[in-house]
Amino acid sequence: MTRASTALNSSVTTSMTNPTTKFKVLFVCIGNSCRSPMAEAIARRTAAELFETASAGLRPLGLVQRLTLETLAANGYPTDKLYSKPILNDAWAEADLVINMSGFPRERAFARREWGKVEDWQVDDPFGTEPEEYQRVFEDIRAKIESLKARLRAKTAV
Image 1 (tube, rainbow, N blue to C red):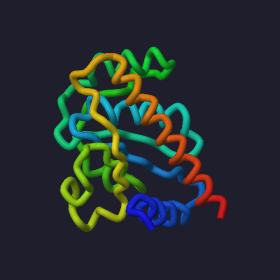
Image 2: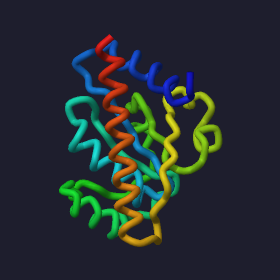
Image 3: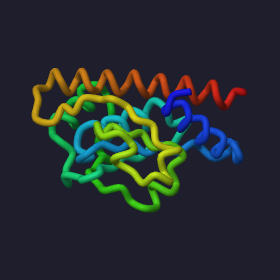
Image 4: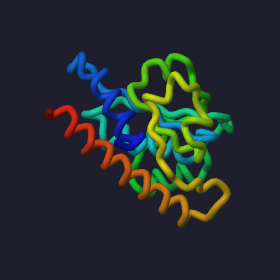
């Protein structure tokens, strides 16, 4: 069993104790400026029936990059509720699953007692690159979210 499926299995079991409550996913990257805000916007629109979503940064930059906002808008995703923020205690505690896109393995980024709810995703950081790279990263994240939705549906259908 992979680390990703272990995190998902334990989180789904926890959230299934109350079937009326949506699964809560927290997307984390370094600056909460590119990858995690993209994931938040994508999941908010395409997975709202399955889970609630939020994003945060290990070291937030304090702003969402212009090219992140432009890429989301060009693909038809709203950006009005996105802002760069740190990992807040309440958001962490409420999350059933934390998607780590920081590039650091969960063992380096988070406390040991929290590893069980963290899933590492390898997603390139587009910060400082061209619009085409932002689009490629957007498509990568969107595909990963579709995969996550399928895994969640499969786990909750059991």
